[in-house]
Each structure stands twice: as structure tokens, then as C-alpha cells.
Length: 116
Length: 113
Image 1 (cartoon, helix red, strand yellow):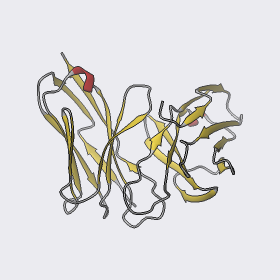
Image 2 (cartoon, helix red, strand yellow):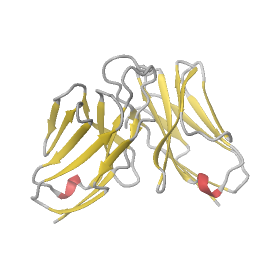
Image 3 (tube, helix red, strand yellow):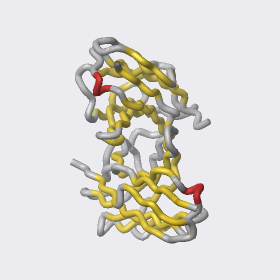
Image 4 (tube, chains in turn green, orange):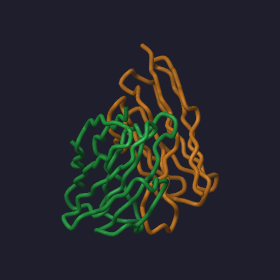
């Protein structure tokens, strides 16, 4: 157990629907990162939050949004789902948001989304 | 844009053999991370390399970093079946204020008995 908790583990839904993925970071970590892993795109950075504020944005579609709450858990919202959104979505956390020294990300087990 | 490229992308090897995975990155950075992912599982941190010439070893795996060449290597010595997994290298941009990691494509290692 890495200490990063993601729910749900598996999710099957239909095109056009909306889903919410949830992540609780490791205790003491202030940064949360969302990554999408698919066979054709590899591991893609989506978005990062640090202590409640958006810190960096990657290849995140406009149909996707995220937020980090005061208790530091984060949610990734995926709407108007398409077949191509089927992927494994990882949440990771770290202590810092980009200061000097190592910034090792600890990954959760992932949420596997299947869009039919 | 920061790019990270690994090669080979797939490696099938016999137990007991040695091999090296290469990781090239496109911009200045002196922080290089290696992760392991078992099929259907999460990513597990293996090594963090923080300076030019850094070398880290754990069991049959040894990682090194050459920041001038923008190259890191992951060397496997006398491979065993348990090392079968996908290995990712990742980089964050020097002086970045984010800490986000950009990952390579991954190298899938298959060790045959």
C-alpha cells in the first residue's frame, strides 16, 4: 500500500456520460498529480495541484477538470466521455511542489475507466 | 517542450544475461527518476538521481546519470524472471516550480527462464 488511495478501482460507463475519480494523497503530501495511461499515448501528465491551487497543466482536455479540496484530497471530473477516454488514470502525490532536491511521486493503484 | 525517450521499448532476454536500458531527455535537468510497473499495477519508485555522475544500485539494477549527455542508463545484471516489468524513466525540468514528472514511453522487460 503506497498510501495514495484512489477510488473507484474500476469504472465502466457509456459514451457521453460523466464520471468522477477520487484521490486521497499520502499523509503529509501537499501536491497531487493526475496522469493518464493508455497503450497509444503512454503515461501523460494531466494536471497538478499544490495545497489547493492549480500548479501545472498538461495535456488535459477541456472536457476534463480537477480540483483539490481543503483536506487535500482531489477529484478528477471527466465529462462527455468518448471511447478514446478509456484508460488507466493514476493519481500521485509528493511532499513538495517543485522545490530543490528530489521530488519523488508516490502513485496510487489507479482507476481503470472503460467507456463503451 | 521536454521530451523523454527510452530505448529499447521492448526487451526480451534470457535469465543470467546483462543488458542496459537507455533514457535520453531533451532539456536541461539534473533530476532523473526510474520507476517500475508490473502489469496492471501501479508505478513504484526505484531510483532518484540528482547530480551528474550519480550512480545508484539496488540488487541487480544499477542506474546512472550523465547530465551533460542528457542520458541515464538502467543496467540489469544477471537478469532473473522477477525483474520482468515495464521500466520508466522520468525527468522534471530544472528550476521548475511544479515538480511534475515527464515520463518516457517505458521499456517492457521480459526475462525468460
